Image (tube, rainbow, N blue to C red):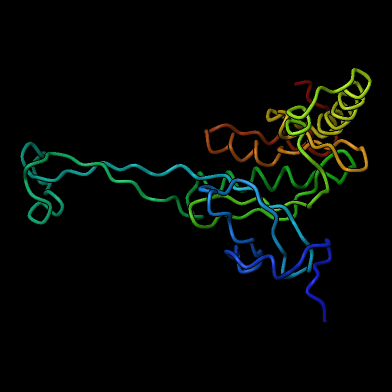
Amino acid sequence: MTNRAAGGGNVDDYAGRVLADRYRLPLPPSDEYELTESRAFDTYSGQEVLVRQVPLPEVVEAEVLDAEGLPEGFTARDARERGAGRRTSARSSTRRPSDPAVRRAVEAAQAAARIPDHPRLDQVFDVFAEGGSLWIVSEFVAARPLAALLAEKPMSPYRAAEVASDVLMALRVLHAHGWVHRNITARTVLVCDDGRVMLTGLAVGAAEEALCGYDPVPPAEDADGGEAGTG
C-alpha cells in the first residue's frame, strides 16, 4: 500500500476541503485568504489534478420592511420583527447550482471541455458548482505560468518566438472548432518543464462570459469543425 498519488504527490498532503465528494484539496497556507487555483487529489482516479475556482456573483434582493407607501393589497414582510425605522433593505444570497445563470456557466465550460485533446491545450475533466463557486477540474501539468518566468528574467527573442508560435498553434486549433479565446494572458500561457507551451483558461473564460450574460459557445456547425471563427 502506498500513499503516493499517481501524479507523483503524496496523498497525505491533501487533507483539506473535499469538493464534489471526490476532489481533496491540500490545507491552505495560513496567509492565503482566497482559493483561485490549487492542486487536488482525485479520489476516483487516483490522479493529481488542477482545480480552478470561479466565484459566483451574489443575488441581491430588495425587500420592503414596513407597510407605508405599499400599493393596496400588499403587506410588509417581517415588519414587526425588523422594525419600522427603515423603509427598504437589501439582502444577498448565494447562487445555487439550479440558478439559470449558473447552469449556463456550467454548460459553457462543459462545451469548452469537449474540444478534442491537443498537446497545446490543457484537458478539462470536470465542471460543477458548489459552495457559491463554479469549479473547473483539469489535468495537472508540470509547468509554470509565463508570468512567473517573465518576473524572474527577460525571455530571449528566440524563445519568445517559440512561445508565440505554440500559442498560435493552440489558437488555430480553437478557431478550427469555432471558438474564440478571450482569456489569453501571461497567466493562462503555461511553459512546461519539458519546454512545451500550453494554452489554458478557455473553460474559465467561457464560464465568466456566460455569467456576464454572453453566449461564448460557437454555433453547432462551427463547434463540429465547420466554418471557423476569426477572432
